[in-house]
Image 1 (cartoon, rainbow, N blue to C red):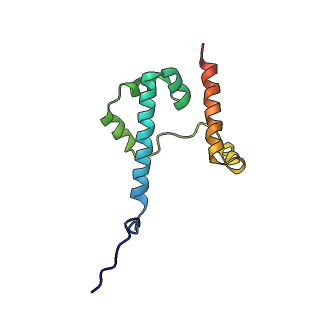
Image 2 (cartoon, rainbow, N blue to C red; image 1 turned 90 degrees about the vertical axis):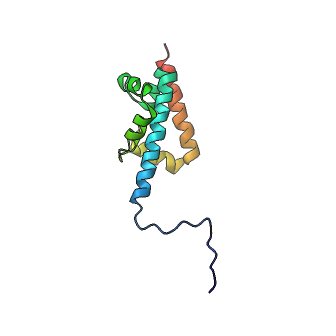
Image 3 (cartoon, helix red, strand yellow; image 1 turned 135 degrees about the vertical axis):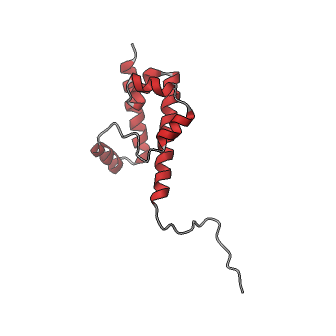
Length: 118
């Protein structure tokens, strides 16, 4: 009987990818909620611009416990959505590539921040 070496980098075949996608959605949600909470605590004005949430929600997030954020994140539904039109994203990806897209989004956020400054 011969042992066949197993490759450590290979994942076992997945029969149902849904649980893995749920885990990814939960992780995205938690990262988004943690980012919103931290920015709400340090700079509420910027949090309103970056996350697109109203002040009441930011105030709730500011005081939310990690357990509460984890429970919200595990809802199974993506809690955030892009604040730009999908056709704009498609056009940008076709013409400039992902790295230029990130730079473009940063420029938009910086411009919005300057407008919000008194």
